[in-house]
Structures are given as C-alpha cells and as structure tokens.
Image (cartoon, rainbow over all chains, first blue to last red; front, side):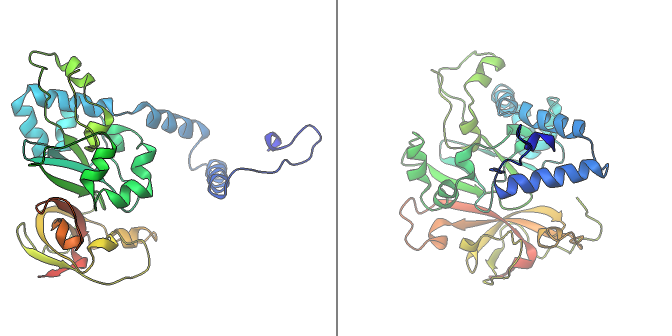
Length: 203
Length: 100
C-alpha cells in the first residue's frame, strides 16, 4: 500500500468515501484469497464500459425495417437480441411498444434497475431520487422537462422495473425516414428514446 | 433462474389483485406506493428465487411466481392530475398479493 504514503512516509488522509474504501478493501481481499485476479476485474470493468445504448438502437432499427423481427422482439426480447449477435446474458427483457395512442416510460423506483447488458450504465438522472419518485406521479410533467411533449390523446404506461424484468422502449419510427438504411435509422435512436423520456427525430 | 418446484401460480392475466399492506424490514422489492392498492395482473413473468431471501445469502426457494400488476394512476395517487387512463405497471411477487 505504498501508494497511500507520501514522500515523508506519513500516511495521507484517506479522502475517499466510506463505500469506496469498503469496495477497495473487499476487492483486495478477494484478489488475495484468489477468488479472482486483478486482470479479471480490469477486463470486466472494460466490458461494462464498452457497452452502451447503441446496442439497443441497433435492435430498434431492425424492428423498424423488419415486421417479422419486430413481432419476435415483442414476443421474446432476449432471443431477438441474441439473433443480432448481442450477448445479453441472463437478461429477462420485456420490450414495450409506443403507438399513436400509448407512450411507455421506464423507471426503477426502488434503485436503478436498467437493461445494462443492452444499454450500458444508466445515466445519473435515471438513478436520481427526483426522477424515480416523480415519473410515477406526474409523468407528463417530467417528460416536458426532458423536452418531450406528448399529444393530449396519448396515454402513458410507466413501467416500474422493481424486480427481475428489464425493459426497453420500442419507439415509433419518425416521419421523414422513409428509405433510410438500418445504420442511418439507428443513429436517430438515442439513449433517452430507449428509456422513454425522448422521441426519435429525423432531423 | 431456479425453477425446480416453484410455488404454484395463484393468479392469471386479468385477475384483480390487492397488494398486502404490510411493512416488513429487509430487502423488500414491493414499492411502498402500491401497498394496499388494487390492480390487475398484466402477465405472469415466471418464477424467481425470492429476493427478500437472496439478499441475505439464503436460497430463496421455492421460487415465487412474479407478476406484472397494472395499476391505474388514480388508484395509486388520489390527487393524480394527468390523464385518467394512465397506468403504472409494477413487478410484484405472489406472496405480496391477495385476491381482490
């Protein structure tokens, strides 16, 4: 632990928070006990950081151009992701489809459950107490704050990801994208579109 | 997922159910805001080891059926201000549900 000592050999004050220090201590113990290696930790962290919402965008773009794929995606989310070669682990994925009359939005009111194998790490706002408490109580008002205004005749389904399922919103394909390639379509699908706080735009 | 001899499912899609209004300590996955509220089973998701047990390194068996229960927002919040047909769908384990 020489890295915690300054040049004079005096221990520096440890300014990391309690949980950071706890995490480091447990990690070091597990490595010392041979449960896993430092390389395992580094590789796993790299894998986690390499996953982002573009995996989900690819799934949505395919569903927009292939009606049979869309049907399979709504029937069995995990199998449809695996069809595209995405490794999603033991993910129990429920895909919820936006229509002209229904808008879907995802939250985990209890913590921060999120389809990480498909979208990567959740954004800070998704984990915030404010989003988690308000989106089940005044969803339109929260969506307005994201810059998303729904037509008045659209009802909202909020999905509270409170247990073993994970959710992905299948947004509607925006007007003005006729004839676009899957790659170009995927570019208009942002992370927030997949959580339901934004709508894809062709511009 | 362990599905060997799960608890048999008591409910099916469309059934009206009420969430138990109880406040045990521990790693409980039933949000406070739906306790004591009545909703409709949207689907049976399968059976999963009980997370209230898994959190304490116990096996959580037999696996508990997990449902998605659909609640009208006005059932959850008496002063709900937005559309009357808005819903919240919540995952709830069977041992938290009773027939309504």
